[in-house]
Length: 202
Image (cartoon, rainbow, N blue to C red):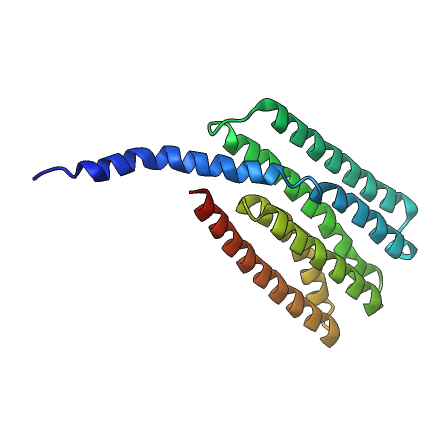
């Protein structure tokens, strides 16, 4: 049986092509410089808004951790730009970025504790609004690389959904369902954007 040489050539080039695609996805991640400081600014506004319900030291620690994470991610971006990364090292840089996004998402997830601190729905709506905005920004900024996008969104949104649903009041359950639906829609949008980016890179 004759061997289809064209198929062998295509297979031989598949792995290098995928490596180059992955490297370009990671490069697009590190171009999103505005997203990182926006997290710290928004966290400051959120801390002021919910200050009546938390000890000053707790808010100071929360903001301090945000500062550490944001500074670390800035240094990571600087090192990436200075390292002249290749397709071989792209996966490592992608993991570093995803860990930074996950740490940021975990800190945002802590803001969902407002549900336990007060029963006033005004503050619940405020935090849900903030998290929804940050979630949308995270999807838009990290859509080129799904591990980073999901690493930010999931830990930031799951805690408040669980806490709202645990209140067992109609208003809070409705908010939890709406937030879940919003997260699902954003995840689908992020997936579609990711596919378009990958196709364009190829």
